[in-house]
Amino acid sequence: MNISAEEEQIKQFCNNIFELGLENIDLKDEDVFKATVGALSYNCRRLENDKSLVALQQICTDERVDIKKRVFIFWQLVIMKFKNNICNEEKLDLEYVYKAIFESVKAKVDSLERIELEDRNRNIVVLMTNQFLGYQHSPTKVLLSIAKAIETIDDEVDEIHIFNTNELPNTIECLFEGSTPSAFLDNTDEQLQGTYQDAQLSRCKIVYKQNGKGPFRIENLKDMTKTIYNLKPKYAISVGGTCLLADICNEFLDVYTFSLSNDLPIANTKYLAVGGSVTEVKEYKYNEKQNALEIPFLFEIVKEDKNYTYPREQLGFAENQFIIAVVGNRLENEINHKFLDLCINLLESNQDAGIALVGKYNKELLEDKVPKEILDRFYLLGYKSDLLALLRSTNLYLNPIRQGGGLSAVAAMSISLPVISTSYGDVGKYLNRDFIIADYDEALTVITHMIDDKRFYEYKCRKMKSWYSRFSGNSLEKFINYINNKS
Image 1 (spheres, one colour):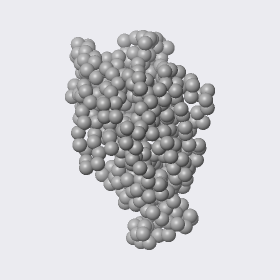
Image 2: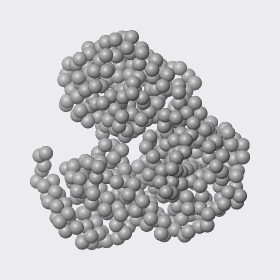
Image 3: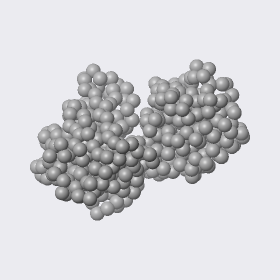
Image 4: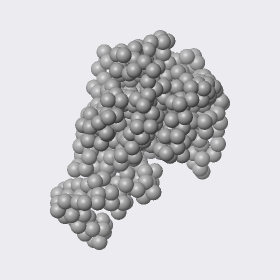
C-alpha cells in the first residue's frame, strides 16, 4: 500500500501510542483525546491497521472517557462492521465493548425492584428502538409490524408505548475518520399519524416518546426508565439490540430483544429473538442468564396488494435482456473491486445480460473501471419508491458479500425471483443451499447457466417460490402469542 507523507506521520503517531500504552495516555485531556482517536480511526479505516481497531475498542471500555464519547465510538465501530469497513473482523468484539459500556451506565442508574406478573398492567405493552425514521425505514417498519401483530391478536392490550432512545449518534462527538451523523427526525404528531396510518395501526392508543437531537445522555435514559417502570407494562420488546434502555429495563421487567439481522442481537435482555428456518417458535438456553427464541423468518414484512411492474423500456432495459438486480442503500461501500469484477465478467460472458444498480451509486466509479463496450449495460436506477414493481422487471437478485440487504432480498423472494448470495450476512441466512454460492467465481458459473438455460432458470424460480412459501405466514403473530403465553 502506497501512503503519503502525512499518512506516514499518522502511522508513526499510532505506533507511539501502541508503544506507550493507552493506559499511560491522558485521555481526559480533550486535545490529547481528539488527536488519539483521530489518528487511530484513520489508521484503522484508511491504513487497515488492526492494532488501531483494538485500541479503539479499549477506549470504549475506558472509564476515564466520557460515556457519550464511548457510546459514539462504539456506534462508529458498529457502522464500520455493517458497511464491511473493518480491517480484521477477528479483532472486533462488539459484544464485549457493549457490555462494558452497559455496566458503566447501569452503575449510574438507580436500581428498581422487579415488577411481578400480577402487578403489571396487562393492557400496556412497551416497544423500544434506537431510531424511528418512518415506515420506509426497515427497523421502524419491523417495530410497527410488531405493533400491528399485537393489535391483531392481543385483545387485552389497548395501549402501545413506543420509546425512541435515539442512541444511534445523530451528532459528531469526536474526530473519528469517516463518521457521519445518523439520520434524525423530529417526528411531529402529523408525521407520526401518517406513519401509523401506513402501518395500518388503528385499534390501540399509540403513545410515542423520543429523546431529542444530541449526544447520549444518562439523564434521558433515567427519565425513560422511570416512565416505563411507572407504566408497569405487560412486557417490552426492543427492536434491533444494543439498546441501553432495554437492558436497564430488563432488571425489573421481561424484555425481549428482536434481532434485525439473522444473528442473535447484542443485548443483555433475558430473551433474544432471531429468525430461522423454523415454522414455530423454539426456545433454548443461550447462556446462564439468557434464552434464545428462534422464530420463523420475518418474510411477511414485505406485503403489497397491487401487481404493478415498471415497463422495461421506461427503465432502459431491452425486452429480452436478462437483468441482474443489485439493491442497497450503501452500494458505494458494498460494491468493491471483487464484486465489480464479477459484474464485468457476467456482462462480458453474456451479451444478453444487464446489471441494474438500485440505490445511490456514483457513475464516475463505473466509468473509471468498466470497459466502454459494456458500460451501457450497467443501469444506474437510483432509489425507486416501488421496489417490488422494479424487481418484477428484472430476472435475478444478486447479493454482494455484505451484512445487510435482507429486506430487499425478501422482496425479491416474495415474487419468486431467484436470489444468489454467499452464506455471509443476513441474506445468506434467508436462503437454502439451492441459492448459496461459495464465492464470486461460482456466482459467475451459476448465473451464466441461468442465462443460457431457460429451463434451469425456471426451475430456480419454482425452487424460490417453494422455499419462500414455507415461511411467509404469520411469524410475528406466532412470536406475540408465544410472549403472551409467558406473560
